[in-house]
Length: 598
Image (cartoon, rainbow, N blue to C red):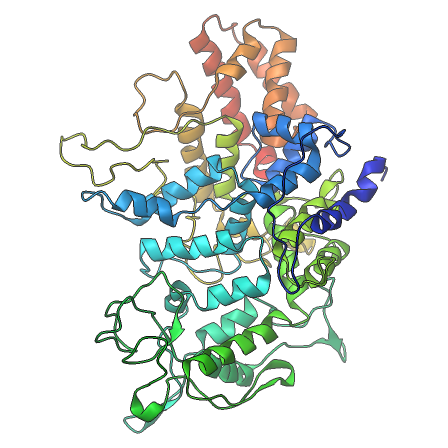
């Protein structure tokens, strides 16, 4: 394959960017760069609008015409610098602001609405996209009844930690009360006797932190190939190790705003937004007095976990308990299989469902060492994912991924320059106080048509699994297709109807749109066909191809759309031109070519 000369150094660009940041030993880069002034010649322009669009579809919630122009003007390196430097746009503070209104009634729909607002409009697009990807790897969910505000705080943990170290993020996840509830180790305690039976520690988190959040079921080489012994895969753990690791995750309960009458097993004055602590029963955290003669609810004995690692016995103090948990997390984060396990899933979420072993190996190498001897630097890792030669080369063969429903919606909105609706008014249509007052509604809060509601996965295995293979030609070729797991004839129809409603039927200029409804901007596209002929119709189709399909619309599809347009009478009004644009949009947004991100 012939590549332009600049592509040979694309992968090195990710490493070079890492060197631009100030670092300290053992920590991820601090991206507080002073942006370059733009006086230097741009040498890493994507080369075309289509190339810029393709990168943005991978790196953000969708390409917009403005962002395509900006990327081409400043190049990959400065675009990444700026994205890594943006402060995080968070969900929790927005919800807290709404809840200050005494008539406001917070529910999960407001959280999901806010997810879409941030996905479409937040300036820290790469961070937002990374948080969404991490939410599908380090899965917690409100599907088990966890409150809206606690779920939002967990997502904010992922957003804040999107470019930090994997180890730091794993620690925040582990001590999160949301995760503690989700995987049932909140108030988990050391083995004890009850009614003549021994009650053992809950094993949920011990199992899933290994299987899903770190290194998986079997050992992997850096390129994700299997480590074999006697021709067989080598397991990373067994049930004995799960039981041993479960003893580590004991003794954690809510931190409190006030410890009066607080107990390990109650919710008195709990603060569900603070990290869990190894709980001191009757006194504030700086006092090490525990109930039951000084014994904690943490298992203080030595524990032998995976790879023969033994954690020594610890004392009956809060600090010793938390040190024991952190020692186990250190061992998990440093496991040799973590780098390929996490690298592969990030590549799947951003670029392609079937990355080559070489691609995984290159990203794993950056995970293991960001160039400054820091392991697990997620900022460096995502740069490596996006700037790898495989990601930037012209796609061929089984390269790419099915766009998951959330991304189909956000890609369409961003491509069509959606404008947010007005905040919910103080009074509803009946003239009564509006319990959603102030919310900016994307009308997707309780929408089940996508089979994918952010932070509402049905299980810890996410909406779909990274190793899912769609039966038929995909499975027969040994390929993976994660997003296909949630597609059925029914779900495809419902999803397309919802996207049509949100991205085609509600537009600036439509008659009597609800004030709170987001509206797409079709005016620039309609202007392409003020003068109607094959050339202007071709320009319209090509513009939509760049915005929605990274310029990769096939020749037959392009010809079919132009024929469809020319076979009708010419539109003579602005309304008719918008309808003609909407007609083309319906075909594109429902097409297999749009469905697959290449």
